[in-house]
Length: 295
Image 1 (cartoon, rainbow, N blue to C red):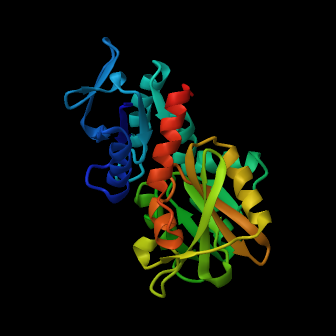
Image 2: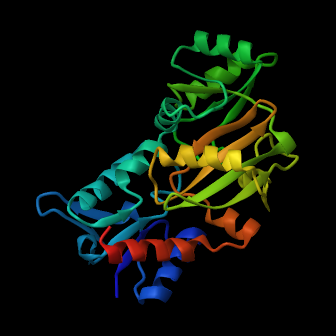
């Protein structure tokens, strides 16, 4: 039987669920914490505990760390080495790098003519204040974050100078400033794909206590059926990155559908809670088929 390891966070729901699915299918189970790997460049080997990862049949990257940060790019470099040496890794580490950094993801989406909320990137506080004044309300987003962590609302009419200064002081030298848009029904959509094929959509509906729809801030998952046009837009967006499993974050607005981002790792929980779809089972089958086919 094939030995497929899960790069993830030991003890976390999605990593363990994927490892459980693989164990049921293969009899092999391994969740790999990248913070505890050992990379010997001279010998060309990467170990996790006593396992030489290069001897496995494949790896699935579910999570590369508990929080997004530039450090995760270094962990992906270790996996890129293994991939270059012939180990099958899903999704390709180089392709994950392009979505992990919010700016890199945005540049790729805009070059692909994907509609997004008005966005400005600057390191200049004066320019930041000017664009916020133009937007009236903006969302300041760290380049590395997930589930809205570190994001703040900048209101041109209330303490905007302090807001910008605090955002810079928090380590955001490069400011990603996006116009705050009004979403229909206070929800955004998670449109999921496996191997480039559409799976299903869930909605994240915001709670009253927060401006965003993140489940970490009170949002809940609900099933949702978007229009064919929105699914086609999401399919076009995710195709730019060629990830094995991903979720495209989309908002329905009065100006049409807009894409926020393409996820590096997708959303198992949303699919299960809203749609009753076990993405771990489907992803495990997908990878085992590709490994068996030598792809």
